[in-house]
Image 1 (spheres, rainbow, N blue to C red):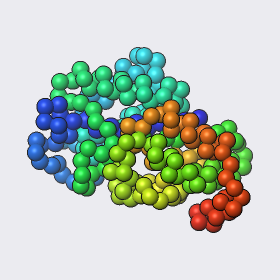
Image 2 (image 1 turned 120 degrees about the horizontal axis):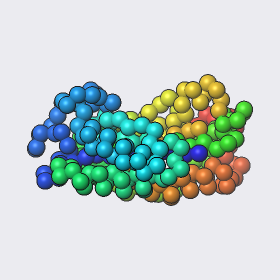
Image 3 (image 1 turned 90 degrees about the vertical axis):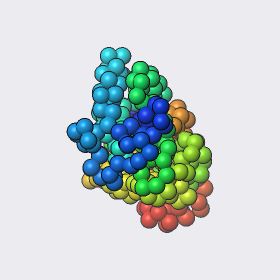
Image 4 (image 1 turned 60 degrees about the vertical axis):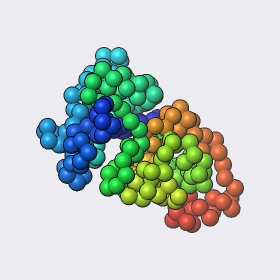
Length: 242
Protein backbone atom coordinates (compact mmCIF):
# COMPACT_ATOMS: atom_id res chain seq x y z
CA UNK A 1 0.00 0.00 0.00
CA UNK A 2 1.29 3.43 -0.94
CA UNK A 3 0.25 6.88 0.26
CA UNK A 4 1.98 9.67 -1.64
CA UNK A 5 2.34 13.33 -0.62
CA UNK A 6 2.89 15.52 -3.71
CA UNK A 7 4.48 18.85 -2.80
CA UNK A 8 4.73 21.73 -5.27
CA UNK A 9 5.79 25.36 -5.60
CA UNK A 10 3.64 27.99 -7.30
CA UNK A 11 5.46 30.66 -9.30
CA UNK A 12 4.11 33.96 -10.59
CA UNK A 13 3.79 33.46 -14.31
CA UNK A 14 5.26 36.69 -15.61
CA UNK A 15 8.20 37.19 -13.23
CA UNK A 16 9.25 33.62 -12.30
CA UNK A 17 9.05 34.34 -8.58
CA UNK A 18 7.05 32.42 -5.92
CA UNK A 19 3.37 33.24 -5.59
CA UNK A 20 2.71 35.64 -2.73
CA UNK A 21 6.27 36.96 -2.61
CA UNK A 22 7.04 40.62 -3.36
CA UNK A 23 8.58 40.79 -6.82
CA UNK A 24 12.36 40.77 -6.43
CA UNK A 25 12.01 40.62 -2.65
CA UNK A 26 11.42 38.12 0.12
CA UNK A 27 8.65 37.42 2.62
CA UNK A 28 9.24 36.94 6.33
CA UNK A 29 11.19 33.86 7.48
CA UNK A 30 9.70 30.38 7.30
CA UNK A 31 7.60 29.24 10.22
CA UNK A 32 4.13 30.79 10.12
CA UNK A 33 3.20 29.54 6.63
CA UNK A 34 2.92 25.79 7.27
CA UNK A 35 -0.76 24.77 7.32
CA UNK A 36 -1.55 28.47 7.67
CA UNK A 37 -4.74 30.41 7.05
CA UNK A 38 -5.21 34.05 6.11
CA UNK A 39 -4.32 36.07 3.03
CA UNK A 40 -0.96 37.18 4.49
CA UNK A 41 0.23 33.61 5.17
CA UNK A 42 -1.61 31.26 2.80
CA UNK A 43 -0.90 31.90 -0.89
CA UNK A 44 -2.66 30.01 -3.67
CA UNK A 45 -5.30 28.45 -1.44
CA UNK A 46 -7.97 29.04 -4.07
CA UNK A 47 -5.86 27.14 -6.62
CA UNK A 48 -5.32 24.25 -4.21
CA UNK A 49 -9.05 24.09 -3.49
CA UNK A 50 -9.93 24.16 -7.20
CA UNK A 51 -7.53 21.28 -7.80
CA UNK A 52 -8.81 19.01 -5.02
CA UNK A 53 -12.42 19.64 -6.06
CA UNK A 54 -11.55 18.73 -9.66
CA UNK A 55 -9.89 15.52 -8.41
CA UNK A 56 -12.91 14.54 -6.31
CA UNK A 57 -15.19 15.24 -9.28
CA UNK A 58 -12.98 12.94 -11.39
CA UNK A 59 -13.22 10.18 -8.78
CA UNK A 60 -9.67 10.60 -7.42
CA UNK A 61 -9.79 10.32 -3.64
CA UNK A 62 -7.64 13.16 -2.33
CA UNK A 63 -7.13 12.65 1.42
CA UNK A 64 -5.87 16.13 2.26
CA UNK A 65 -4.14 19.35 1.25
CA UNK A 66 -2.11 21.93 3.15
CA UNK A 67 0.16 24.90 2.73
CA UNK A 68 3.82 23.93 3.06
CA UNK A 69 6.73 25.42 5.00
CA UNK A 70 7.94 27.74 2.25
CA UNK A 71 5.37 30.42 1.38
CA UNK A 72 3.87 29.78 -2.05
CA UNK A 73 4.22 26.01 -1.78
CA UNK A 74 1.69 23.33 -0.92
CA UNK A 75 1.00 19.61 -0.65
CA UNK A 76 -1.67 17.22 -1.90
CA UNK A 77 -2.06 13.74 -0.41
CA UNK A 78 -3.47 10.65 -2.05
CA UNK A 79 -3.96 7.74 0.33
CA UNK A 80 -4.18 4.98 -0.67
CA UNK A 81 -2.45 5.69 -3.96
CA UNK A 82 -4.81 3.73 -6.18
CA UNK A 83 -4.23 6.31 -8.89
CA UNK A 84 -0.59 7.33 -8.93
CA UNK A 85 0.70 10.85 -8.74
CA UNK A 86 1.41 11.52 -12.42
CA UNK A 87 -2.33 11.98 -12.84
CA UNK A 88 -2.37 14.28 -9.81
CA UNK A 89 0.58 16.30 -11.09
CA UNK A 90 -1.07 16.62 -14.51
CA UNK A 91 -4.20 17.86 -12.77
CA UNK A 92 -2.17 20.41 -10.82
CA UNK A 93 -0.53 21.69 -13.98
CA UNK A 94 -3.88 21.90 -15.76
CA UNK A 95 -5.45 23.79 -12.86
CA UNK A 96 -2.54 26.21 -12.63
CA UNK A 97 -2.47 26.81 -16.39
CA UNK A 98 -6.01 28.12 -16.12
CA UNK A 99 -4.80 30.66 -13.55
CA UNK A 100 -3.10 33.49 -15.40
CA UNK A 101 -1.12 34.43 -12.30
CA UNK A 102 0.70 31.17 -11.57
CA UNK A 103 2.59 28.17 -12.87
CA UNK A 104 4.00 24.99 -11.30
CA UNK A 105 7.70 24.20 -10.77
CA UNK A 106 9.46 21.27 -9.16
CA UNK A 107 11.95 20.42 -6.45
CA UNK A 108 14.04 23.40 -5.23
CA UNK A 109 13.64 26.52 -7.37
CA UNK A 110 15.35 28.80 -4.81
CA UNK A 111 18.60 28.81 -2.87
CA UNK A 112 18.88 30.03 0.69
CA UNK A 113 16.90 29.29 3.82
CA UNK A 114 13.86 27.85 2.04
CA UNK A 115 12.44 24.34 2.00
CA UNK A 116 12.35 22.45 -1.30
CA UNK A 117 9.44 20.37 -2.57
CA UNK A 118 9.44 16.61 -2.13
CA UNK A 119 7.14 13.70 -2.71
CA UNK A 120 7.15 11.73 0.54
CA UNK A 121 6.13 8.15 -0.13
CA UNK A 122 4.39 6.24 2.67
CA UNK A 123 4.65 2.51 2.20
CA UNK A 124 3.66 -0.73 3.86
CA UNK A 125 3.08 -4.37 2.96
CA UNK A 126 0.53 -6.71 4.49
CA UNK A 127 3.21 -8.32 6.65
CA UNK A 128 4.24 -4.88 7.96
CA UNK A 129 0.67 -4.26 9.11
CA UNK A 130 0.23 -7.58 10.88
CA UNK A 131 1.43 -8.64 14.34
CA UNK A 132 5.21 -8.64 14.40
CA UNK A 133 5.25 -6.14 11.56
CA UNK A 134 7.93 -3.96 13.12
CA UNK A 135 10.52 -6.68 12.52
CA UNK A 136 9.53 -6.68 8.84
CA UNK A 137 9.80 -2.89 8.79
CA UNK A 138 13.32 -3.02 10.22
CA UNK A 139 14.37 -5.56 7.60
CA UNK A 140 12.95 -3.27 4.88
CA UNK A 141 14.92 -0.32 6.28
CA UNK A 142 18.09 -2.40 6.26
CA UNK A 143 17.56 -3.37 2.61
CA UNK A 144 16.85 0.25 1.68
CA UNK A 145 20.08 1.37 3.34
CA UNK A 146 22.09 -1.03 1.18
CA UNK A 147 20.56 0.31 -2.05
CA UNK A 148 20.55 3.98 -1.07
CA UNK A 149 22.54 5.16 -4.10
CA UNK A 150 20.31 3.22 -6.50
CA UNK A 151 17.19 4.80 -5.02
CA UNK A 152 18.65 8.31 -4.98
CA UNK A 153 19.52 8.01 -8.68
CA UNK A 154 15.85 7.28 -9.42
CA UNK A 155 14.24 9.74 -7.02
CA UNK A 156 14.11 12.90 -9.14
CA UNK A 157 16.30 15.33 -11.05
CA UNK A 158 18.00 18.06 -9.03
CA UNK A 159 17.31 16.30 -5.73
CA UNK A 160 20.81 17.17 -4.52
CA UNK A 161 19.62 20.79 -4.13
CA UNK A 162 16.88 19.60 -1.78
CA UNK A 163 18.50 16.77 0.23
CA UNK A 164 21.09 18.90 2.00
CA UNK A 165 20.58 17.76 5.58
CA UNK A 166 18.77 21.05 6.25
CA UNK A 167 15.12 22.09 6.03
CA UNK A 168 13.69 18.78 7.29
CA UNK A 169 15.74 16.61 4.94
CA UNK A 170 18.53 14.08 5.28
CA UNK A 171 21.83 14.45 3.45
CA UNK A 172 21.73 12.92 -0.02
CA UNK A 173 25.07 11.22 0.75
CA UNK A 174 24.02 9.34 3.89
CA UNK A 175 21.19 6.94 4.67
CA UNK A 176 19.43 7.36 8.00
CA UNK A 177 16.24 6.32 9.72
CA UNK A 178 14.39 7.38 12.83
CA UNK A 179 11.10 7.45 14.68
CA UNK A 180 9.07 10.66 14.23
CA UNK A 181 12.20 12.27 12.72
CA UNK A 182 11.67 14.65 9.80
CA UNK A 183 15.41 14.93 9.20
CA UNK A 184 16.07 11.35 8.17
CA UNK A 185 15.86 9.32 4.96
CA UNK A 186 13.24 6.89 6.25
CA UNK A 187 10.81 7.95 8.96
CA UNK A 188 8.82 5.54 11.08
CA UNK A 189 5.73 7.08 12.63
CA UNK A 190 5.40 7.25 16.41
CA UNK A 191 2.16 5.28 16.27
CA UNK A 192 3.79 2.69 13.99
CA UNK A 193 6.54 2.16 16.56
CA UNK A 194 4.05 1.94 19.41
CA UNK A 195 1.77 -0.55 17.67
CA UNK A 196 4.63 -2.41 16.00
CA UNK A 197 2.80 -2.45 12.79
CA UNK A 198 4.68 1.35 7.29
CA UNK A 199 7.43 3.63 6.72
CA UNK A 200 7.76 7.00 5.04
CA UNK A 201 10.51 7.45 2.45
CA UNK A 202 11.28 11.17 2.58
CA UNK A 203 13.93 11.10 -0.18
CA UNK A 204 11.88 11.36 -3.43
CA UNK A 205 11.75 14.83 -5.02
CA UNK A 206 8.53 16.42 -6.22
CA UNK A 207 9.46 15.65 -9.84
CA UNK A 208 9.93 11.91 -9.23
CA UNK A 209 8.31 9.26 -11.42
CA UNK A 210 5.82 7.52 -9.08
CA UNK A 211 5.88 4.29 -11.06
CA UNK A 212 9.67 4.10 -10.77
CA UNK A 213 9.71 4.96 -7.06
CA UNK A 214 6.95 2.59 -6.00
CA UNK A 215 8.34 -0.26 -8.11
CA UNK A 216 11.82 0.25 -6.66
CA UNK A 217 10.51 0.33 -3.09
CA UNK A 218 8.68 -2.95 -3.63
CA UNK A 219 11.66 -4.57 -5.36
CA UNK A 220 14.13 -3.58 -2.64
CA UNK A 221 11.96 -4.52 0.33
CA UNK A 222 10.26 -7.66 -1.02
CA UNK A 223 12.30 -9.26 -3.81
CA UNK A 224 15.92 -8.23 -3.23
CA UNK A 225 18.12 -9.98 -0.67
CA UNK A 226 21.56 -8.75 0.44
CA UNK A 227 24.45 -11.02 1.36
CA UNK A 228 24.58 -12.05 5.02
CA UNK A 229 27.81 -10.11 5.49
CA UNK A 230 26.38 -6.89 4.02
CA UNK A 231 23.23 -7.32 6.09
CA UNK A 232 25.20 -7.76 9.31
CA UNK A 233 27.36 -4.69 8.65
CA UNK A 234 24.35 -2.53 7.78
CA UNK A 235 22.43 -3.72 10.85
CA UNK A 236 25.35 -2.76 13.08
CA UNK A 237 25.74 0.65 11.45
CA UNK A 238 22.03 1.45 11.74
CA UNK A 239 21.64 -0.13 15.21
CA UNK A 240 18.97 -2.46 13.84
CA UNK A 241 18.29 -5.87 15.32
CA UNK A 242 16.76 -8.05 12.59
